[in-house]
Each structure stands twice: as structure tokens, then as C-alpha cells.
Length: 405
Image 1 (cartoon, rainbow, N blue to C red):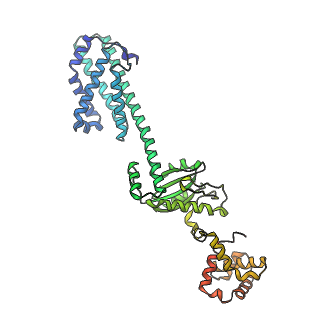
Image 2 (tube, rainbow, N blue to C red):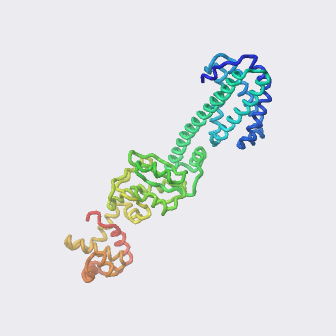
């Protein structure tokens, strides 16, 4: 700053240096009175250190204006700027804004100028010198303020990046199923307060950033592949969460105790796989964190809790095919067309617990047609349609529509 290169004579600076302790005390008292955020700090154990810092800042200023050189790295200004930078970083680490610090700088500048100007007047300094001196005081405070602002911003950026890294690490150990003590340590390092539950959400990457801003601040964000992101949402109330995601091609897993969130993610991935037949949107590839892929989700949110039957029945595709083959073996003598109609009717009859009118409405046929087909099925299956074991076998075998139909 060019104004800081202006030099005061030793004769001008000498009385100011002599009065420095008194000026520092006046400055501290003014800051304590006018900036409440620093009242406790000055009154506590830090008070002595802060007083020394104020004296050092004023002393640096007087050394600076007594030199001909400007603010090069070797000038007295450099240590002062480093101290101000560190002070700004310290405020950020304490989670405080710069409002109080900048207010303290302003109060300090005003009081220091008032006291130093009074001394200069008493020592007979001309008005022009005092005017230059005022410029120097406020230029110096501007330099310190700017250094603190930079330090504060740098610390926020650094701590933000570091915390994001730690949160990503936490999500990774959660989804990897690491031991509870490992996960708890990762949560503590990330300064993350564990919730009661976590809910895994598979979400298109393009929508994740806007959605995550609307969720609990503790939501963990897990980048997947180029298409999909995983969100781990704390203590989610399900209905509002589903409404929030209604316009997205998202898959929502069940809420699970937070240490068991991997189960929620696995469920969401499996549901995304089987949702294809009812989906109308583009597919969503599962995240690399899940170690698998998901496809065929619809253009709106899919609630994994609505697909439990498909999950259970479809857990062993080969076993389901064998079960279906056994259940439908009595129909082997029918033509393909006839067998298909009978299977369709039997499935609806099981689902509607034998209510003929409901079956007819489901199949869009006349109730007499249902009666005819059920008569044929009873002829084929005989007493097996009264056997609980066979009813269970048929119900499970026909729980899902024929994938070959």
C-alpha cells in the first residue's frame, strides 16, 4: 500500500512509542466495551496474551512508519500480516464469523488514532503530519483486516474440503460394513452426530446436488458412477422424503439403524433391478460403492417397501422357475392357449380368495367364464386346491406374473 511507505521522523515517533502502553490499554478497554464478543476473552486467561498482541500490533505500526521502505517481505509489516492471517484462521476454526474481529479492528483503529493524534498535537506536530499519520493508521488497519479475511476464507475452504473428505470416508466405512468402533471413530473425526436411522436413496447424479440441499445437513453424499449417486439420509420421515423425490428417478431403501445402512442400500439396488417391467424412465446404474448396478427404475420415485413380494419371491430365480414348473405340471395336457388362461384365472382366484366377481373384474371376463375355468381347474387339480400345502405352493409360484408371458 503506497500510503504505508510514507515516513514519519524519529522525533515524531518517539513520544508515540513512549506512550504505547497507555494507548494499548485504552484500545483494549474500548474493544472490551464496544465488542461484546471479546469481553470474555479479554477478561479470561487470554486477556494478557491479547493485550500483548495489541501492543505488538501498535509497536509494529510505529516501526513501520519510522522506515523509508514500503511493505516488502523484510519490513515490520510482514510479521503483523502473518499474525492477522493466523487470527482470521483461528476465528474460522472456532466457528465464528469475522464480524466481531473486524469490529474490533475498527474500534482499535479509531481509539489508537484518537490517542496517538492527541499525543502528536501535544508534541507540536503540524497539521499536515497529523493528517498523513491518520492515513497511515487506517491503511495499516485495512492491511490487517484484509489479511484476517484471507486467513478466515482459507481456513473455511481447507476445513470444508477436509470435512467433506472425512464425511466421504465415513460413508465408505458404513457401506463397507466395517466394525462399529471403526465407524464410530470415522463419525467422530468427521464431527458427524449419528442419527437413529439412515435411509439409502439411489438418485440420478444430475439431481443429487439440488436434492441434498433440501435434506438433513447430516445427509451423507456418496458419488457413484457417472449416472448415479447414493444419499444416506438421517432420521427420514418416509412420506415427506418420497414426496420430495417424487419427480426424480429415485429408489428409496428402507430406514435402518445407522450402523446397518448397507442393508438399506442393498435393498434399494435389488429393487432397482426388478423395477424394470413397471418402469417408464431411463435406467439408473448402481453406484460403485454398492458393488453392483441397478437398472430400469421409473421416471418417478420407487419405494423399496412396495416391492417386498418381488424381492422375496424373486430371490432365487432358478428356484422360482422350478417351483412354478411343479405347480403347473397338472396343466401339461392343455394347449398353450388354454393353459395360459387357466393359469391367469388360478392366479387371480388365489389373490382374490375365490371371490368370483372380483376375479371376473380383474380379468375383464364374465363371471360365468370364471366359473367355467375354475370348474376345469378343479377337475385337473382335484383335492389339491383344498390342500393348504398346495395352496401355499401355488400362491408362491404364481405370486408374480409369468416372466415369459
